[in-house]
Image (cartoon, rainbow, N blue to C red):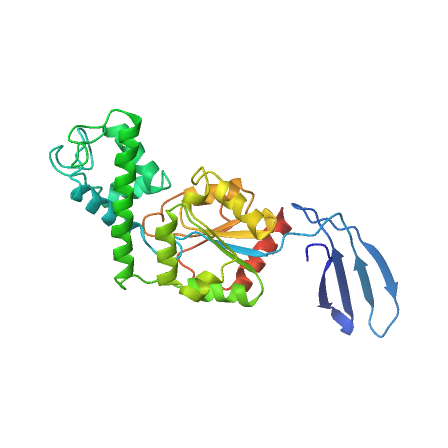
Length: 320
């Protein structure tokens, strides 16, 4: 419907068996739907009105469905937390001052409450650790007996921890104990069957996301994606909109015709800054966040169908 007028026919049955039929044809600009009626009255057994309208451009329509990975396709934050803590233990990472460690002589351990706050504040593994070490002091470890003081050694520490954590996370995913969240696979299949573009945009490292997708949505679905972007593909992480703006270009679809599925306020901000409408399917760690900018909020996707999302997007456009 990008360059074509869509037609909506409404039929209302009135008293005395009189039927009034209104046919609206409209084009709209990117934000608002305008109606400029031209009314023509004609005779028939029933009284009927034909109303057509036109404007400058077409309304938004769902042409691409974009999923975040962690928290949307799988509820993974507890798995990432486990992998980080295993990395801290493996390299005996000890910070001089840490609220997430019982003592500076014990390896760093991010507890559930702290990690929920951290992962909803900062996207990407390396930025998480870099922020944490800046706040609580750069740590000693088996990699550096004394805390690194120059940028090169600090980068080496972060890179090594992230690489080891990523491999540990892969082992957890490959264990076969992790399943996709309810409704995700069905919604993906509905979108592809309806001819919609399908994409996954994740702030995580590409290797870990590829592993997740291959194991959780299956190789065939993964290879049929029209676009796949990970944190490695953009300079700035969410809530920066770069990853979604890049996806729109690769898909060849206007931002307003993309619908993003996110689970956190960070992802929601990235989508809305990119000019994309966004629905949220929250997890236990994000349920209390402020999702006021989302066009709809769901506990999961088990009862959400593609037609629901299409109607939702149409209603949002109609009320603007």
